[in-house]
Length: 298
Image (cartoon, rainbow, N blue to C red; front, side):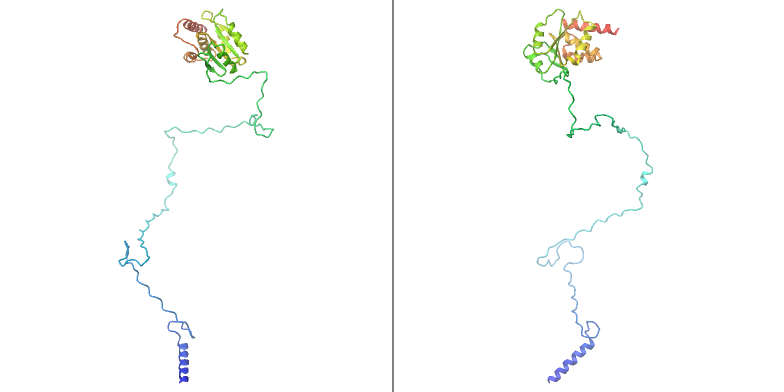
């Protein structure tokens, strides 16, 4: 019995080796038999666009994701368009609106000693300007109004006008601001010895110009113009007792020295004491100045 079983087993193995596996390689010899491919499972969603979960529901733990709409078609670009074709018929024309003009660049002169300056000390800063010890430095223009000088007006830098300053507050303020000269306009024969004494006591120079409607002449105008334009006497303060003399003299200065028009000269001289429609000394001085100008024109 055992021999029969051994023979049967040997015969079976021999047959299998000769025939081969029906699913495997037809080559001779024993070949491994692969397993059959699994059949695809049916899709749980019905065909077509999905607007909701399938009728049977989702498996446990699954999440419903609605279908996304298809992307919008991208327009195709045409290669037949010539971008330079639209510019062939263009022609420049000036516009109606204001235009901007570019001027040629300015050429810097290399011979200018300022541009060619090279600091020698290595600090990169230019040396301080030289100061002439013989020239007295002028005080900076002050915008503060003094207490002791009525109708104080700053005509320009280092040149001011007003009425007679008080001996204490007014003159002390002028001294503190660095004024060098005080010009007093007064009628001929009037005395200003007290003012001179107090001004010179404070180290300032005192100058008198005697003028009146009767004595007004071109000589007075020239002297006034020389004093207010002389840098050697600046800073300078001009005053009189009531403004009748200073207003007209400043008006004549603007007309003759600065060549201002009549309207411009009046406008500048009014804060300095000029009153064209005034009475008494104001009217007399104004008429005298007009008469002098008419005679100069002729």
